Image (tube, rainbow, N blue to C red; front, side, top):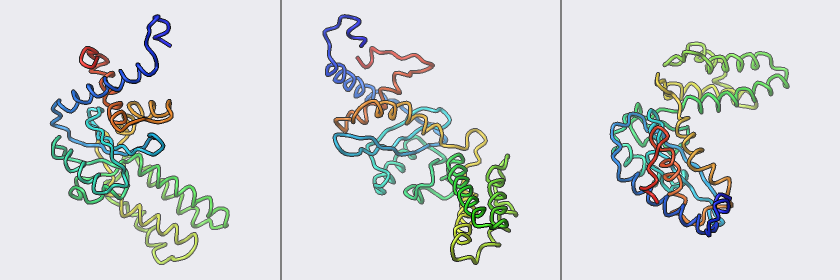
Length: 260
């Protein structure tokens, strides 16, 4: 639309080609810049349609700086690929902590204390399950179980959040520890999972979530992916996040001469 207003002789294909070339230049600039001193490395995966198939992407973000570090064409289901990239990036940027969701692929990549779970993701997933089971308990006329799940929700929402497992949670776990059937078994499993993961959840006073990574994915990748039928090549899938990140620049300014 802009090209037509300017009476340009360009076309959609020309614009797409130029954007792809600019993205590759932005990617080269991004890769060449040094990124040391990253304290918390946020990692998350996503996907987008590409020429009839789904392309997996892995994003690495500086949580405190809220900036994209790397984007790699890797499916989260590719455990060896994920582990290799995470170890390499942790070493290259000197990160002290790895921040992810609860996807099993991230378990054991770094030392136990150096891997922390996103607080927002943990609270949302456990809270959603507790609400669901609470409704089942009410429908089954099980007031004790419904109250137990309400107490669990209150514990999940504690502010500030205790770094160690609260005594009340331990009591709830013991109450259902021997249950093996039906609704009570489901409550037992949820309570044990919350207890087991409690200390693994980030308590970082600056930012205990991985929201910065999800925001970068949305701004540099998903917005573009939703406005097209699919990327046509792997190089474009990788180049676009770098170009989008470059265009946002430093304090809102970027030098277009570097990529056009």
